Image (tube, rainbow, N blue to C red; front, side, top):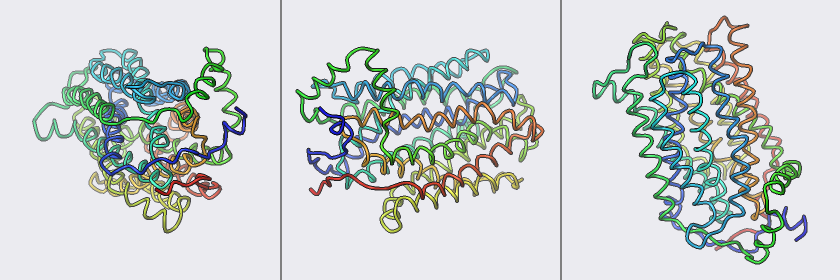
Length: 452
């Protein structure tokens, strides 16, 4: 097998078009994955502050999330490319293992009694989510012909949005509909947050199991060649060597998308870390984490996150139509610029209801981020290394998150007098830059098209 064979995106196997039901089944697991991910994004900063974390230290505590992704995703992608079982397939074993571990971590997280325990569980939770999530991206490339890939990623985006809408609202629903307290003694996590995480654990596991048991996978195209290649790269040393070499042999389109991803994910990570503290201070007028006002702000951030995830779910199937008219690059540019403007505008809003408006723009940006780059990338990758390169692509999601975690706390403390809302402004500027950088991406689809 030559190097050209490894890097060519040509597919000799013409994949059959799947029914809409089949596309739904193979994507449904993302409902549970994002359910857990949304609970993490909307509530972990709140948990950290409840357990005594200072505002400029939150970013450093969050660094666990991107670091685990940096380590886990390329390894899981590499391993899943080299896995095959007649019953379990290639990607589904990793879906299952990640779901079990994530459910355990979600159940334990709200029982944290000290800060170090919550920080450790964030490492475990994020690593476990990554074990399930990374193979799902490669799953679309494995299963769908080129003509259905944008729809496949859009379907994932729909379930991501739907799961996140419900998960983000749970603490608010428990408090305002069922009268469950959102306050507790100093250093104690409220019942509304605890129950939300317990439900999240069950939903995560059951949703992923649905995909595992309703979806089959294609075996390696040439089993003999696949087995020889697996044997050639057997062993941890050879695996790490191939991963490191593959990083420096990325397709050109992937390198161009990497720059866009860097500025995009810096913005989203700034939002996830600092929205609760920023909105509590800027709109609700408090920094007292033990006060009901602060907990109400935390609940309202869940509502805000529900809005952007809901918009993401609604627009997921509109983006492919827009992309057909103006192209994927310009679609991504438009969505990111609108989203960035939304983040910046929150600096000037002092009414909580008005905060929902910029989240519409953020939802457009989120929907596009989960759809367009992956649809472009899948057509530029070699079919037999889809999982590996999807994992490597995650580097350009987690590296900006590490940068954000390392520097945003310093900027907020040193230049903005501990006003966390300015971290969102920095994020908005970064997102707009990412939008214009989309124009440098060379968007070419597979050399061989599936026309069934």
